[in-house]
Length: 220
Length: 305
Image (cartoon, rainbow over all chains, first blue to last red; front, side):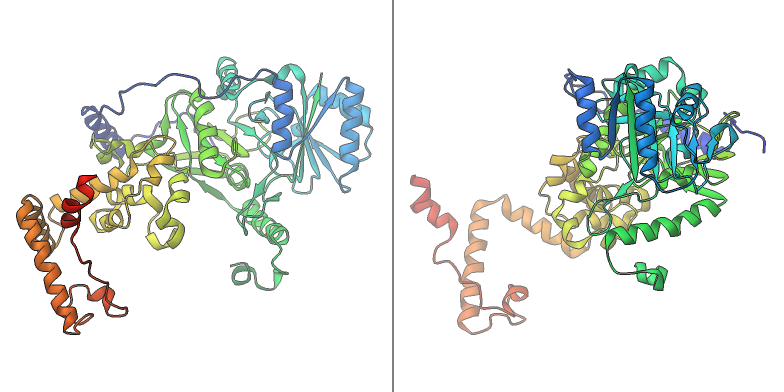
C-alpha cells in the first residue's frame, strides 16, 4: 500500500467549512482576544529526581536507580525472573544488546528489527526519549521499539539514563520540537504508569488493555 | 452487561476477574480488526499530530494494531502548538479524574513509516463541522467551543448526578451537553437548557472558564426569541412583567390571591381542580397560609431594623 503521508484531499466540504470559519471569525468576541492572564500555572520543580520518584510511586510504577551498566543488567534480570516463562521483546539498540549480553537470559529474544512484539511476549524492553519529573512519565516515540512495544506485553521495562530526566512537560515538548522528534516519528506517547481502569465499581484495576507493570531503570 | 455479552465465561463479579475477561475478549477484537476508529482529544497545528488520552490503553491498541486507523473528531479540537499540551493534558486529567496526567497521552502524526516496527498502513483524519462553524460565528456563545471534554461539569452537576448520562439522549450529556447539543442537533434539544436550576456549579469548576449556566440562559432566551414557546406561556409572562413593574397592582394581586386561597381552603376545596396549588395539595395537607404578607411584615418589623 502506497503511503499517503501529507496527502491533500480536495473536496468541496472542506472549502465550505473553511469559508464558514473565516466568516465566523470576522465577528470578534472579547473573550477570545482577552489574552493570557499571565502568571505561573505549575510550580517550578526544584529537585527533578526526587519529584520523578514521588510521581512514579503515585502512578504505581516501579522505579530503580542504578549506578552502572552491571547494576542495571542485574536489576533487569531480577525483573525478568519475576515474570512467567516466555519470549521477551527488545528494542534493537546497542545499549540494550549490551544489557541482553550481560543478563544471559535463556528466554527467546525478539528484537524490534525483526518486527512488532507478539501477543505471547512476556515483557518488552525499550529505551525512552525523556523522563518527565512533573508527572512521573516516560516519553517514548516510534523509535523506541515501535507502537506495540509499550502496549502489547503484560510488562513494559524502560531503560533510561539520568541525563534524560527533564523537569516538566514544557521542557520535554520544547526539546521534541527542537529535535524534530515528531517529524521523524509517526507516533509518540507520554506514559505515566501501567494500563488501568476504575470503570467497574470505581475499583482501580491495573492491566486493562496494556501492561500491568511499568518498570523504569534509571542509570546514573 | 458482562453476563449479557459473554454469558458463561463470566465467573463471579470480582472487578479484577472481569477486567481480565474484558482484556482477553477485546484483545481478539483488536488483533483481528482491519480498521480501528478513534476520536481525538486535541489536534496540534504546528506538528500536524492528533492527541489521544486514555488510561486503559484501548486507544493505544485501536490505533496501533489494525491495518487502517481513522480518527473522527470535531474541528474545534485544534490547538496552535505542541507545547500547549504541557498545560492542556494535565488540566484535562486533573479536572476529569483527579490524575496529574492520563496514563497514555499519545500523539499520532501519520501511518507507520519506513523503519518503524509497527503501526497502521493507512491513517485518515475526518474533521467534523456539524454546526460548530455556525457556533463559531455566534460571538456570544462561541466560547462553548473551548470545551476540552474533561467532564468536570458533569461530575459536579446535581441534575446529572441524579439522572445519569443516558437520560439526556445525546452524545454529550450534562451541562455542556445541554448547552452544546441544540447548536449541533437543532431546536428539538432546546428543552435540555430548562433542565437546570442554574446553580452555577458547572461554571465554578470549568477549567477553561466557560460560563455554562449563563449559556443555558442564552439558549432559553434564543428559544423564546425564535417563537418556540406556547402562547399561554408568553401571555403569562407578559402579565407577570406588567404586574412586577407596578408595586400597587402587585400588592393587590398578592392580597387577592391570599384571600381567594383562604376562602377556597375554608370551603374544603384544597387539592380540588379549583385549587391553583393542586399539584402540591392533592396528596398533602394544604400549605398553611401566613397570617401576614411579607410586605406587611417588612413595614411593621423588618424594615425598622
